[in-house]
Structure formats: structure tokens, C-alpha cells
Image (cartoon, rainbow, N blue to C red; front, side, top):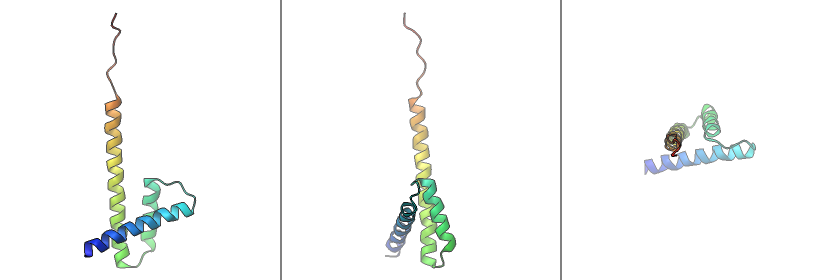
Length: 87
């Protein structure tokens, strides 16, 4: 039950951060989301929300790393050896 509460709170904080970005007409990006979560964490006093904020930051960082890895793999597979003329 505790894990479910923590996961739900994490999702809520991510949702609040995205809503804040939308309300500010800011560009939505992983970096902007991470910055907004950090800013919210600086103002937070509730222990449960602090833990959820830290967890949300970790989740966003992991997602950013996964995306960067996928992009790097995609870029490598796009590189093909140069072909010489066949005639």
C-alpha cells in the first residue's frame, strides 16, 4: 500500500509540474520538467511530497538517459559505410 501511495504521489507531482509548464506557456521538454520538479522541491515542506519529488526527479533523469541512449543507438545504425562506384 505504501508503494502505491508513493507511486501515485510521484505521478501527481509530475502532473503538477507539467501543468505549471503549460500554464506558463513554457516549452515542454525533459529538461524543463526536471527544472520545474527541482524548483518545486526547494519549496516543499511535506515529507511525503519531498520523497515523491525526489523519486520524480530520478524517474525523469532515467527517462532522459534512456532517450539519449536510444538516440545514440539510432544515430549509429544510420551511419552506413560509404560505397564505391561499381563500374
